[in-house]
Length: 113
Length: 111
Image (cartoon, rainbow over all chains, first blue to last red; front, side):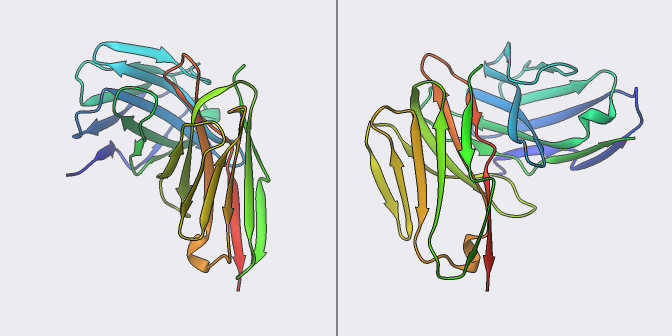
């Protein structure tokens, strides 16, 4: 099993460009999450989803949009990229409920110039 | 807002010394999870604690959950070079489905 797969692994954007990060999981997990990781800031939750067709805001949602049209996919969109969005983005998934571990993808390193 | 605070941010230890990282929440947690991220890698789940006062061990790692379910600790006995990485605690706040991570403790091992 592939687990959680993120596409792409690396990307360089110019300020103002848009892009979509794709997260796919093959574990039939209900919950999916997008985090960003910056030096000294740990993992900050951007948006999350507790099921197909549902999304919710996390700690740092501004400048991002998400969609969960299919249970196995969770898309993170940047409509107008800014240098402050330079970061490593991690997607994670877990079974439903609060007592379940999260499985992480390999990460996407995004640089906005 | 809801916060999970973790200290220290960095720790350098000689190989063979012990290491402890602490996690504190501003609100009661329904559970606490610990993850390890190797340099250049992604976070990997280590363990979960659910009960008040719970203690769990994994070889040289000892995890504790506080009586009030607001704090937790990870203790590594006799560190080895394979322990290098960043250790994160993460918690679900009561009545909330989202997982909030601490900022992590980066462990460096000096040979």
